[in-house]
Amino acid sequence: MNAKIFGRMRSILAHVVLIILSFMCLFFFYILLVNATRSHADLQKGFSAFPGSYFFENLKNVANDGTFPMFRGILNSLIVSGSSAAICTYFSALTAYGLYAYDFKLRKVAFTFIMAILVMPTQVTAMGFLRLITNMKMYDTLLPLIVPSIASPAVFYFMYSYLQSSLPLSLVEAARIDGSKEFRTFNRIIIPIMKPAIAVQAIFSFVGSWNNYFVPALVIQSKNKMTVPILIATLRGADYMNFDMGKIYMMIMIAIVPIILVYLFLSKYIIAGVTLGGVKE
Image (cartoon, rainbow, N blue to C red; front, side):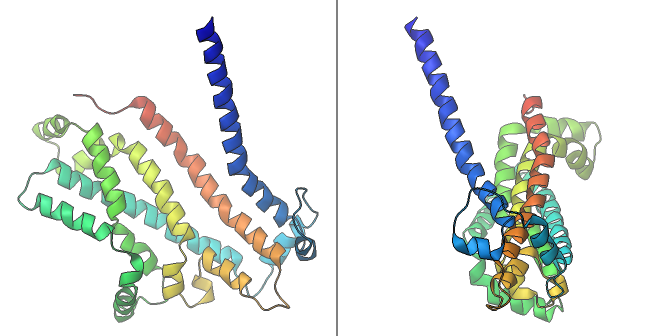
C-alpha cells in the first residue's frame, strides 16, 4: 500500500515538474506572439499578457516596407540554412564513417586534428576567412555561408560516437563480401542506420545557421542577400522616427516559424530511429 501511494506521489510530482518546465518554455513564445499583436505605443506602456489588435497591421508594415526585403531575407536564410544542414550532416557522417570503418596509419592523427579544430573559435579565424573569400571573389555572396559547413568537427564527433554505439563492423564487412562498393554501402546501409543522428544534427545545424549573425554580417553587404538575423538587426538599428517595436516582434515571430516546421518534420525520423533501434551483433 505504501509503495502504491509512493508511486502515485512520484507520478504527481513528475507531472507538476513537467508542467512547470513546459510553462517556462512556452511562456516566452506566448509573450512574443502577444507583443507581435501590439502597436509600438502599446509596447511602450509595458508588459501585457493579453493580445492586441495590431497583428495584421504589423505584418503589413513588415511586408510592405520597401527598405526591408522580408521575403527575400527569409528565402536567403532558407537557402543558406537548408544547404548548410544538408552538406554538414552528410559530409560529417561520411568523415565519421571513414575514420570508424577504416584502419590506417594516420587515423588517430586525423581524429586528433579534427578535435583540435573543434576548440578554435570562429572569431579567431574571421579576418583570415574574410581575406580568403575576398581573394576568391566570393565576398557579398551566399557561398561563404554554405561551403564552410562541410567541415564541422562538432557534428563529426557526434556522428562518430553514434557509429561506435550503433554500427557493428561485421555489417560493413558483410556488405563488402556481397560486392557492395564503398559509397553504395554508405548511402544504402549506413545512412539509414544513422537517421536519428542525422535528424538531430540537421535540426541543430539548421537552427545554428538560421540564427547566425556574425559571419553573414561579416561578408554580406547587399540588402537583397541579407539573412533574417541581419534584417532584424537593421530594424533595431533604425532611427528614432522609424523605430517600431511591433515590426521587430513580428519579424522575430516570422523568423521562428521555419525552425518550428523543420523540427516538426524531422522529429518523426528521430522517434522512428529510436523505435527501430540500432543494429545488434
